[in-house]
Amino acid sequence: MTDVARIWSYLSTEPLLWLTCTIVVYVAAEAVAMRLGRRALANPVLFSVIIIAPILWLSDTPYETYFEGAQFIHFLLGPATVALAVPLHANLRTVTRTAGPILAALLVGSVVAALSAVLLAKAFGLPDQVIVSLSPKSTTAPVALGISEALGGLPTLTAVLVILTGIIGAITVTPLMNAMGVTDWRARGFAVGVAAHGIGTARAFQVNELAGTFAGIGMALNAILTSLIAPLIVALVL
Image (cartoon, rainbow, N blue to C red; front, side):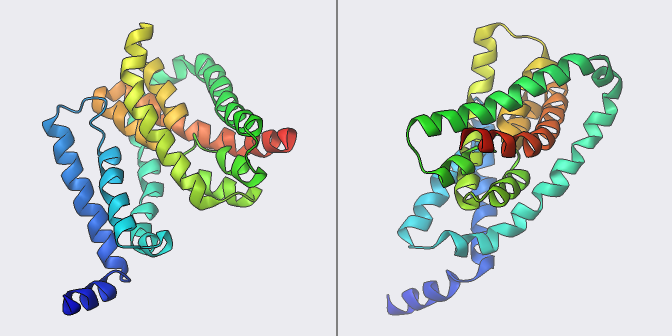
């Protein structure tokens, strides 16, 4: 047992361990999600969090140590976001025909997402730093972390909130849209892209390619708009 403890003490500090752990867990979670027919609750990101979080807790591994390995995956978020331009180009004609509704929905969705989070946090008496960290929760992670850090928030807390927002959005979007009778894939996709960034967009692509395309558009445009309005909303409320 002493030898095992020594080996673990060494490996737990190495970035490669947590990179490998993240990839293996996600691949396994993806396989489980496929076996379950990719239902709303069968979200591989949610499964991965449920598995990895207890591992970090039981091994007493700080988030900073884990992120040294996971940062390689985090880096790929940028290229993955840029790659959304491919389906956008393929459906460019459809997008240009609906530019007006897209801009209107974007403005309402972005403002409501940021303002509601800040106002609710303020109403519950949360510290200012936490309120700031909440403001970009519906934006894709690289942008949200940059906004949080620039405004004096806690990027680590923002990362957690962004992931939770994405998971909740990806899980609830399909049953919610079905219950509301929304059948237009463009509207369904754009809504989840604005509200639940990359995780919601990934879910939209699993359901319908057109929905995924508009989710990608919503995610990209929301990232730009939120970076402009979040500082204004935080300044207004605080």
